Image: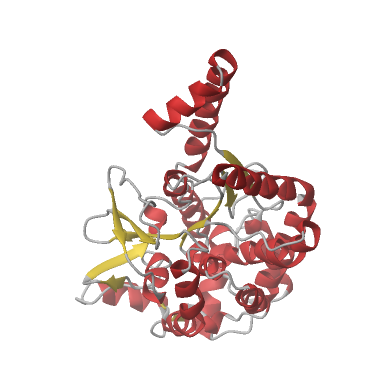
Length: 387
């Protein structure tokens, strides 16, 4: 079952950077490889699910349409501020029995339903071209991380970790929308009678389920530049925007780094055993314990996306309604700390998203040789297993 897996993290408006990476992978890189490098298994959370479904559908046209969408996006396509005033919304929520949501995400729901590649996804799954598509969400009343698994291959299975559950079946636009329902900002989405919100609360970068599918190589497409932290100039000013942005960043920093380190450690064990005892050791430890070598390549933005959001917002103020402007202005670093992390998640304006899409394309292009070698190695490993 060796092959290529792709894991796509959540990150709201930062997902535009992922779209640029995908445009490079499936539009430009094939000219270097000689073929389209579609992954066998795809998992995504939040915007990673919304972007990833187009890869799972194996549709270059859909990937290109997605790229164009991010390059031309407006905030009105994603959300509206409800009702006239944010303070009234919060105040009224204490006296209302309805689901609380600061923003009205009905425009996003309409767009996701309209653009969902239903036919292409069903064909890719049914024919086995895509072995599995996995979407994560959080069950609201229990807090359980739900892994929605769509696969036609009976040999693809997932073992639920503590605090998680696996539900197998056809993934629809509702599953992707539920995965992207940012808590407090967007209303929860019902799936089979259970309300769900963004999977970031438990697993923003769903790597572990892809490991379980048996792929030999996994490409992780993140949305943070954890390896290139922005140095804050001067003392920290704990404004609402600053604290809220750092809180979301903390929620998004799920166990993916620990998962990668665990995989690397197990790889060292397998290599040691193979060198010490021969190839029989590698076969035995995989057959008896399910441990095998897995190569992971992680690609992340080369720039701090919070800083990019702040710069773009002030250079190109979006044309939005007064309530939306009031909200974004609150998030746009009024204390001049140099960061606008929360703004970077909600600035669904084409000046910002087009810049991120371009950056994603260029970041992927910088790693062309590495990406090509990685993908070719995955394909060679899969061909070797097939015999």
